[in-house]
Image (cartoon, rainbow, N blue to C red; front, side, top):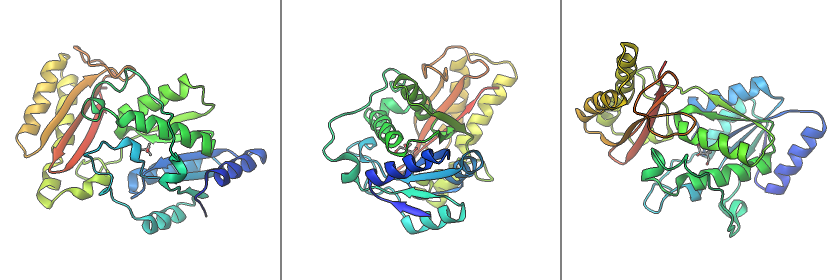
Length: 278
Ligand code: PAF
């Protein structure tokens, strides 16, 4: 497994592999890898001949009061996990290498106005910018993203289509703990008590899906029931919304394929989760 720090070296590697007819599967991450990331790596391994994982805690997607400095990092552990999964390359650039006083940003309009974009107004501009840069550096045939960040997924897919990136964006299912909590690097911020309470995210989504299955289509009523369930814990709700997946705009009537998404703070940990109505 190669560790590449430089943009030029990464581009050269990809060019050479493509020249040999190899396909490149790319898993962009901010490191501190868990089973959720590894499920993306395994899918990339199955579908592509070369697998590149990037590890870069991207400063431009953190707001001034957010957890950039505290964001968990453990490169040695990440390296061992990647090695075990037969990753070919870890692209591990420094912030100066990636940005070098850059003044160009990518903004996907409208899709980022709701949900996480409301409370993190500069977040998706940072995500879209770094992902566009990573696509130009790694030049993948396929890039794999988890659906826990469903809004991020929709924004990246739109960005790739609008900017004519010649690659496939592959959605991958949310990976959960046995008790239903979606895996996240931020789960490590939770105290024992908060960790126990955080299962309410999944159970409130389950309740919403059950109501929908039983015939309730009124988005307001479903949302209210999910909110009430969370309000019985110490969690502070940032949002619970039912949206159309393509536009990320709230809907009045839930339909098959609509997304219920939520963000809840437990202490300093802001956790997100979502489910599609089916
Ligand atoms: O989902 C993440 O870990 C990040 O937002 C990403 C896509 C790696 C961009 O920094």
